[in-house]
Length: 209
Ligand code: PRP
Ligand code: URA
Image (cartoon, rainbow, N blue to C red):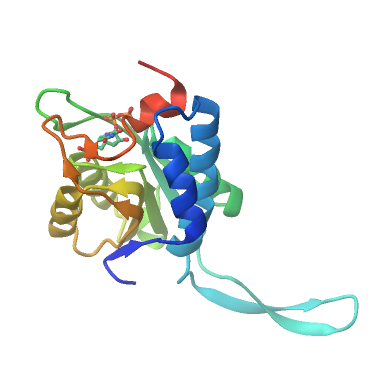
């Protein structure tokens, strides 16, 4: 998989435009994020290991393709990551889930960790970390550091929107982790918000602020 994949599918781009609109309601924002996450998940899981098994259709026996290996792990970077997680679990309901609690310090923009819980055997599993926003990348880089410290070796990062600055910082820190995103925007503003962006993803998802 290439290091950065932009999923420029018409459905993704159409839904993302509605999400960016400041007049879009909290309920629609959440629903659209869930819908887009299905399409991002489709891309992020393209190269899952497969095997075959014998089954019987109503007409005959066949050797049919099926997923192999250990169940994958979705790692949600709280709290906005949960908006992507829900849709990912729609497609892969048997996946395991890790939660990485981080918030961005509003002054230093450093990521501050407040929670971490993950399955024990991360080294044997594909780990797909999810967070809608990759701005400075401080949060994503710390989250991946934590997952690697806990043994994860095969990791992908899925976001909805990324800033060029975030892509650069992330790929420098974790060149082994492919990034799948719906769009790379223009730049960060002086408060490290993505422009044009969509605002604060967590606040728009949960109606806070
Ligand atoms: C947002 C977003 C990312 C982070 C991105 O989370 O969901 O985790 O900011 O910014 P960065 O790339 O500059 O680190 P936030 O800290 O606002 O927390 P929340 O998800 O709880 O709202
Ligand atoms: N976090 C967000 O939710 N939005 C941004 O634009 C940057 C960081």
